[in-house]
Length: 290
Image 1 (tube, rainbow, N blue to C red):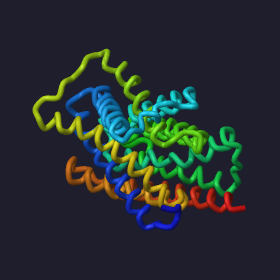
Image 2: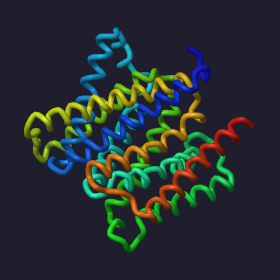
Image 3: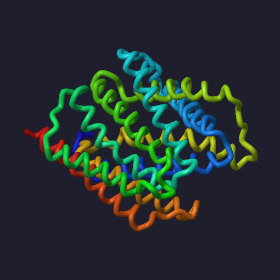
Image 4: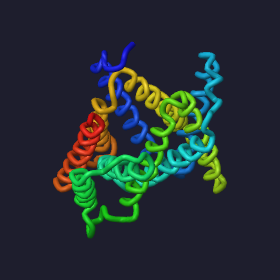
């Protein structure tokens, strides 16, 4: 299996991964209407950790729990856990599509943080694209409207934490095995979210909610595993635009399950954010080739 030899398979896998994460977010929003966000976040990571641990034992890959970068892995895990907590909290109020769209300012933060943390350059076209992306987020939330609350800022904070997570992941790429990073992400997330349960544990009511809580962790495991496999078949520059297929999924799920559908201005803002992110990604690809 050689990189770039099966781009269609890579595209298919990343599309499946994004759809999986969208289903996970939908379940999280549904559960957060009846349970504390801390309990939902804990289920996402604890079950993820159990499933992944069973997989490592069954596949004889227990050695992957040993890390050469413990400090970096801890910080990565904290950033990932914080991003999940912030995003799931925003979903208690925000519609799925709007929350996802605001969170797509992620490439903006990655481009900014890559300068001091990865010694990458940032040129004027990308600086302009960054401000365009931020303006798109403002169009979605529209200060002065009912959507513009503190909850609208949480996906932005999530994107910032996620940007740190991605930058740190880049720094250990080629040093740590993907399974090692997956394991420590779920481990640190579990430890972090367990502290949130000190306010009280909310047990699922009825078999359906039990199934949803279990599904939450399984989807997190499957989604991340499929995402990693996607990059085995195609380069990030080819696959990154397909991340935006999440907007299609969350608009559909939000409409069918919660009766929410973005209005005209929100759709315009989403288009601006996506265009900005795609431009930044393409500019990064062209710069890397020089």
